[in-house]
Image (cartoon, rainbow, N blue to C red; front, side, top):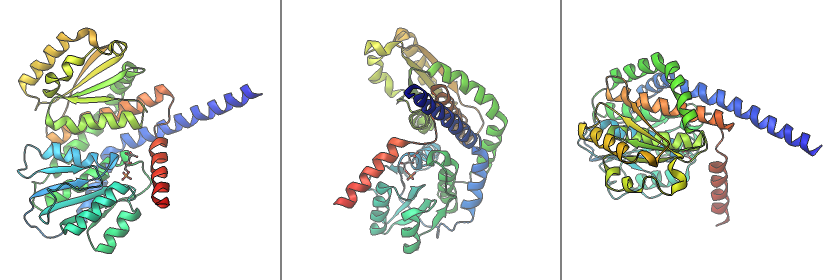
Length: 356
Ligand code: PA5
C-alpha cells in the first residue's frame, strides 16, 4: 500500500515537473515578443524632464536585478557616467540628489528593494519604479514618481524583457544614451530566427552538464551579466549550483585552484562565453588556461555570441543559457517554475518582521 502511495506521489511530481518545463520553455522562447511589448509599455511612460545626472543606480534583487547588470554591461563602453547595481537594503553613498534611481521589483514586495526605494526618496533623487504591482507600486504612486507598470503573473526571471527594456528606454528618453531601437529590433529578429537551433544546442549542453558542476567564464565586460544570468537561471530553474568567474581576472587566482578538491576535477564543465569584444590577448589566455589545466575538468565548451550589435550579442548567449537551464531541469525531473526555498525564506523573514 505504502509503495503505491509513494509511486503516486512520485508520478504526480514527474507530471508537475513536465508541466513546469513546458511552461518555462514557452516563457523563455517568448522573449522576443516580450521585448517588443516591453518597448511599447516603456514608450508610453513619462520618465520626467531631461537634466544632467551624475550616475544611474538600479536597485533590485535576483531576477529583478539582472536587467541592471545587462544595462551596465551594454553601456559600459559608451557611457561616461557610472551605472551601479544595488542589491542591498542600503544604497551606496554615491546616491545623491543628482542620481537617476530605478527601483525594480517584479512582485513589488521585495524588502531590500523597498528599503532602497525609501532611502532614495529621502535623498530626493529622481526615482522611477519598475514593477507589476505590490507595495512598490503603491508607494511610488502615492509619492507621484513615474511607475513602469508591468503585467503580473510571471516568475520574475521570466520577465527579463519587461525588467530590462524600460531601463534602457528611460535612459534614451532622458538623453543619457543613444537610441537602441534598432539594436532591439536586431536582437528580436536574431532570437526569432535562431531559437529552435539554439534549443537543440541547449539540449546537448544540458546532457554534458547533467550531474556536473557548471563553471561559467565571461571573457569580456559585455558578457559579465550573461555569465551572472547563466548562474541564476541554473540555480533557479535547474536547481543546481553553478560557479561564475571572469577572464582575465581568473588567470590571477582561480587558475591555481582548478582541479581541487580532487573529487570535483572530472565533475566540472568549463563554459567560456566569448564575443567579438573579447580581447585577443584574453583569447590567448583562455587557450593557455585550457591547455594547462586539461585534467582539472571533464570538458571545456567555448560559446561565441552571434549578431551585429552588442545588444543582440548579449541576448544570443543569454538566451542559450536560459534554454540550457530549462533543459537541465527536464533532465533532472525538477520543475523549473517554483522556487520553494526563496519563497520559504521570504515567508520566514516576513514572520520575523511581524514579530519584532
Ligand atoms: O527569480 C526569482 O524569483 C527571484 O530571484 C526574485 O526575482 C527575487 O527574489 C526578487 O523578487 P522580485 O523580483 O519580485 O523583486
